[in-house]
Image 1 (cartoon, one colour):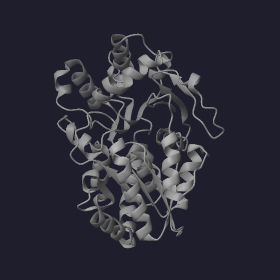
Image 2 (tube, rainbow, N blue to C red):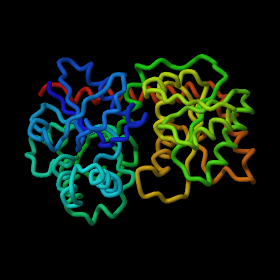
Image 3 (cartoon, helix red, strand yellow):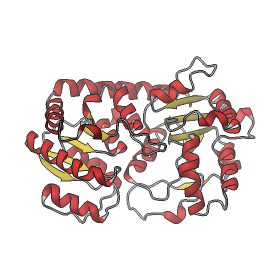
Image 4 (cartoon, rainbow, N blue to C red):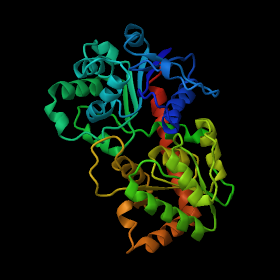
Length: 381
């Protein structure tokens, strides 16, 4: 079976995106007679990082469109691929910056053709499987974009399978005339049942701050310092994204050491097992930790309105749908008035091993159910 897998276009490949795309490789290579081809909307070959670990060769959707739509299954894999807000705020500027297209109009035409499959026969749409996508950034604005809204409804209605990574995206399109569930998991969680559960006590905590603004940096460092101190464990700065000058400062302030080493994404993921828990503001660092049974304290906003892909709602939604709210810390709660209470509550939550085990069991149960449903989409007609 020839399977074409479409991934997000981002020349600046980071650890989180590596885990999303690697999850596709790990899942689909175990399907009988599966022949995999990976695509993005632009050519990523010129941005090859030269990493020595197992890599994925991405082909351009635009240059290989006919081969792409002739495959037995078409998989749109992960994140915001079908979100109109993502197209406007992130994808099109990225396409223009890297000369995938020369204008906004050219970009949008490329996207409608390759991502929404506008103009393709219904038989092509019937081969489509969407997994791990989210529509969280989209508000009522998309209802006024008639071309987009009719196109996304057509694609979702005729697709072989749709697995949104969050319950809210599922709810948004539950009005479609379909009796099937459209709920799955984040791609990086899908294979969690194949990962060992972390059981060793290491007395170390992985800490990384990478997604929030300057005003939050002091709050984060103070919070991480006191949580690790109260828990009796040593903090270690884990370089999730490529290192910046500020990271050297944060690393030194937390642990008194500055690491110059930039590990490969696979090493970063494997080394999560060296820590008892994680403190971060990065969505996919938290996702990958929980997928391996490692509790992650995730920090984000509660009231801030972010119209884009880096907002906190995706983090809050993830934690809410897996009963993880006590592991989610709001920036608004890290104030002089309740700082110590928040730290006390977090440390108390981390000590409840029985609850943590139940949470891990739930995450893995959802992942197993999703993987079985996803496999059904690749059975021969």
